[in-house]
Amino acid sequence: MEKPVILLAHGAWHPPTLYDSLKSALAIRGYELPVPELAIMGAGKTAMSRDADVAILLETAKPLFDQGKSVVLVGHSYGGIPACIATHDNGVDDRRAAGKRGGFSHLAFLCAFAMPARGMSVLSVSGGNWLPWHKVVELEAGRKQLFINEKAKDLLYNDFPPDKAQATFDSLVSCSYEAFTTGVDFAVPDVS
Image (cartoon, rainbow, N blue to C red; front, top):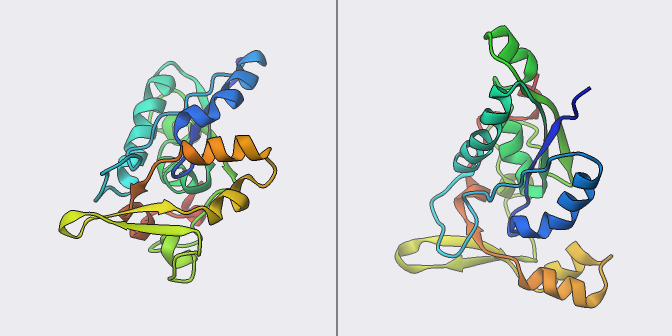
């Protein structure tokens, strides 16, 4: 039986290179792990919502589907939001009913945001307030990005050796503010 491809929607602030050791560990076991860089990532990226990230996940997955492959979609942290939305009409059964091959066979959440209802955002599920480790970065012309401050290092990497925690924290990048404030139109209860 052919192994599925595992597609990872990475967490906010965390560039795909941070998942290289996971890619290597899975490759040894015969699994392919694409980790495309989400669109919201990077300095100066503003006015981008999770829709751009959904598009990137589907651009990565559809050629695999066309080859008849089953894809396990894993959403890590923020990546759970676009991962969930990407499954809409793209499951193995959905595609088979439409006369197509392949599709998402499973959706897994890895320490991820799983929106319980339509209209919710990361900000709304956080009680409408940014957490103490969030940092809103004001850019010119009212544009904003969201980053994290030093308080996040101990929260996110408390099981890392101190030098690895610092190196990981130093590699993080800011993200589009709108990805965290725009409500979803497809939530976990909608997944079939």
